[in-house]
Amino acid sequence: MALPVHVSSIQVLRDVHTALCLFGDDARNALSATEMEISRMVNWLQNDRRLYWDSQIRHCRQELATYKAELFRKRTSQVMGNEGNLAEPKELVRMATKKLEYAEAQLARVKRWQQPLQQALMEYRGAAQPLGDCVSGDLQRGLAMLDRMIRALEEYASGGPPSTQTTRDVRAENLRASVARPLDEPAGDGHPSTASEPAVAAPEVHSSSETNEAQIPSPETAEG
Image 1: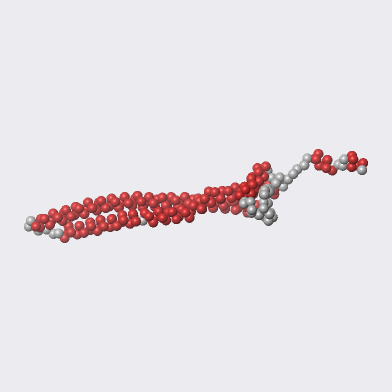
Image 2 (image 1 turned 135 degrees about the vertical axis):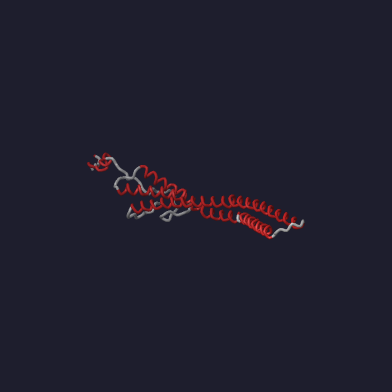
């Protein structure tokens, strides 16, 4: 059975409807922006950084091989009696070795962060999924219900009977609520509900002929 509701201002319901629409837009935009940022970060870590450090390692290895060859050539020249300074080529080999070790360490870090990143993404999406479902499902159904309530109250406040569409929408909503309620769940009066009653019903309007027949007594009644 539909419970009575005291509504003092239809404008408040309109304001709530507007606020819920704005909330839905903000939530969708936030979820979309977050997903875009996540995709950018995943692509940066799994593709950009990995390819970059792979290329840096190849470059450092080639550079180190060149400096080692130069150091070997100068050492060979010293053995053959040609004096030469080995300090510079040794320093170049040392620096190239450090650059190679750094690039290899960075590539190892990139690979090491793959698993924690995937775990963090799973945790985030598991927490954000209910909000996405609410915005795309529950919120839209709630806005539609609130819109029907506002129309019904506006028609009631105007003094006329509710339109056929409004009555049909309210009855359909009550029917869905009745079907969704368990059979053993008590209704508003404390007894199990077997059928839902419409929250808004069109008043019965009798024709003038029916009203006259109800007011004029029959001849048998007049004779008595």
